[in-house]
Length: 394
Length: 173
Image 1 (cartoon, rainbow over the protein chains, first blue to last red):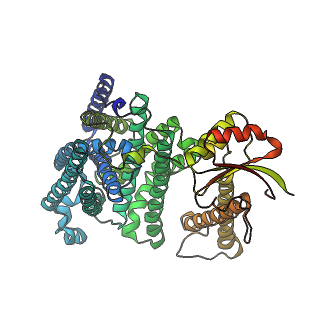
Image 2: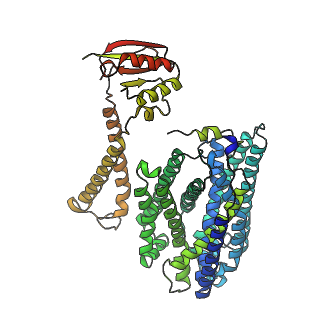
Image 3: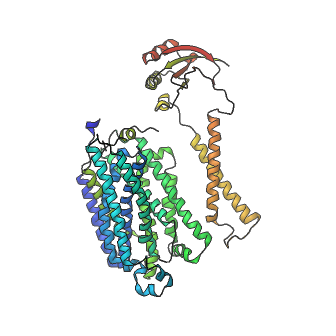
């Protein structure tokens, strides 16, 4: 069987499709900037954070399975590895949002901060210089971590006689601690500080839950697509799909759990500076607010409940697409309401233009992942846990 | 009531798996197979239908959910309406944790009970042991004597490496 494994080759179809998506996305981005620069910056920031988080989920999957010596992921471990390759591009995009800081973040306006005692107290943390330093540090950690994990995995393929499991475990363990800290800071800085008066200590976990769902959805989609294109034949069985289906189902429920945890405490305590977040969303964004719960919790819960559904490639693809779009809406709902209120923009809601800009970023993400995947062995043949991962049984 | 069995003893899980597949191909009804550990693929080879246990859990969980909602609506809004924290009597967010907990509670307990019932397990049950080593390292394939041709069975199992074939009558349901 060893000799039959075909490595992934970047096909013209994938290239053309992603190029077309990127073109659509560029047009949508330009359109939204022309309609209203505020809308443009919101779309750009939300898309960038969304795909940075999908790429980051790759690091999380590699690190957590590396620590646990897990075998379930080994047959398709290359997909999370390829996903991490988007991080440097995401970093460039994130740096570009520097020019939109004034549009999005209220705390960057000196005159507002000076007249606001609460924001004045927060300036040692919430100021542009420290914000940018934190951003660079966070990305440096993620990119270096990704590079280290990938080089270890590559080394394992090239030198199967070397025992690298111990260094993988060590890197992963340190990486997980760094990951937990950095994702919280990223969530607080990039998303929560859109509403600088408001705070929620569970916010980092909430962002993590969304990241997990989108990451596992993208992985599932990639595995199924690769199988459809004739790769990984005889390697990915229905049992592997069942695993991925269980992940999507379980983590969607986890996301809903974290969602209600945040909502319930704020609703119960009823402290004005906390409730303002939900009051604003119930007021103008009520439809999308509940749609968010329906698409990200009810849909996967109902569609993936039965065993047959989790083993059905078509159903998994459908749910993965629903969840990927759903969590974009979720992220949009965290950023947009406050920014639009702040600018007295008449735009309320989530429209076709946001979806098209998301498609553009999605095209770029696919292109990066496919290009990286074509430069690797599709199967990590040096991974000592691969054999166990291939012989997966229920 | 005692029944007559033909028992084939194997010492390798792969042999018993292969023999099972062959017996199914030849339409020989297998009574049961006793193994010291779970053998991957044996369920499929024996053609055992999937358990109804997940549906029991689903129904019990849904029952728990309905009971939880009914309980909270009745106590909070109908029987003894009381204002808590300035919230309405029927507050859906406040009902979420209890609804979730009762769903899990009913689902989990009913699943355990249904599992024991489906497997005919109860405290103090005396399982029938055909072979003292079936919990250690041997695999026993049991056929009901009335439903198979003894000659054919012994030929088939020996072909797949059965170390012993014997007959025994026992009271197994």
